[in-house]
Length: 227
Image 1 (cartoon, rainbow, N blue to C red):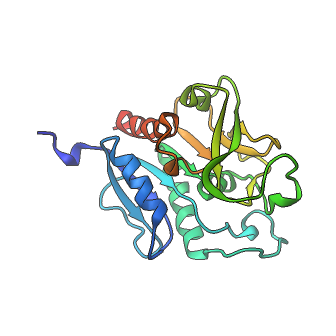
Image 2: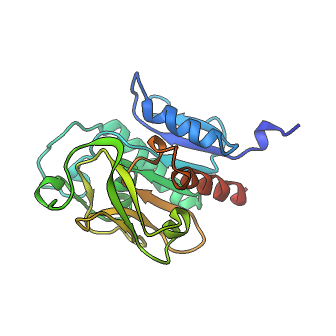
Image 3: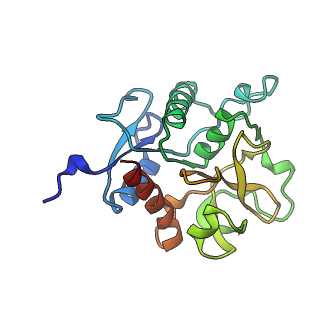
């Protein structure tokens, strides 16, 4: 019998929501890969043991003052969550842990690495809809010769969209690995052996696509190899 404590421990960050739907979906996706999972929130930020990887999940907008000091507040924000996730990201990036950022998580990864965001995509979209839906209604164009290209297995696929912000200027060390039909960044990664990936869509809501399940599998494999 395998000792459960020998399995990698993946932390999943989030807000203090009464209905943490994204957490439930992400936990299910990760547990299918045979790892332990813990939920980290502003009220409960400490993991039960040393982490082997991290998922920064979706949620409210990131405070624009973190990357645009003169920007106006345009949507609900969670300052406590921003502080917690920034601290965790800095720690795990320095510690060499694999990182997966989802939607807000991809944006925050970019900000922590010195990048910036588009605060409202409605002004720059021409070919894609502003409608937010967990269903795969948007087209992803995958950049060749990237980790994402290996994970997706094809250069074009359908993804979902639950955001109105996106990456503008890239953070240090990141490259674009996917865009939509408007050229808006949909995925970033850090080249090299280490797993640092940010996706603008929500793969946890697309478990019926093997490629989307493969994103979580790749994170878990990276966590296992690090152990």
